[in-house]
Length: 47
Image (cartoon, rainbow, N blue to C red; front, side, top):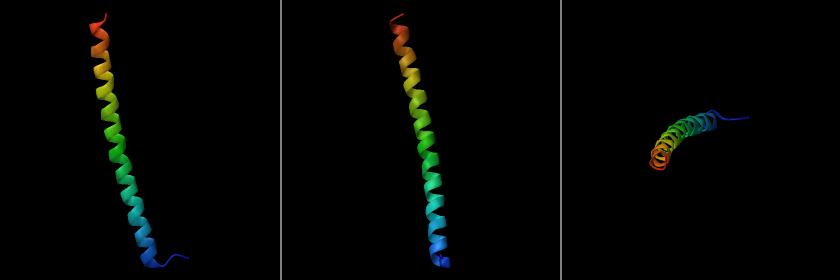
């Protein structure tokens, strides 16, 4: 079984992982949005 210290450590690690994945998701979302807007501008040039 976990000791208290180990439990706290693993909970802290999980929190960090969650917040990291959230910021990565946001970054990824903005990357896709920027990419799609650039793509639509690019397509309009050739219409």
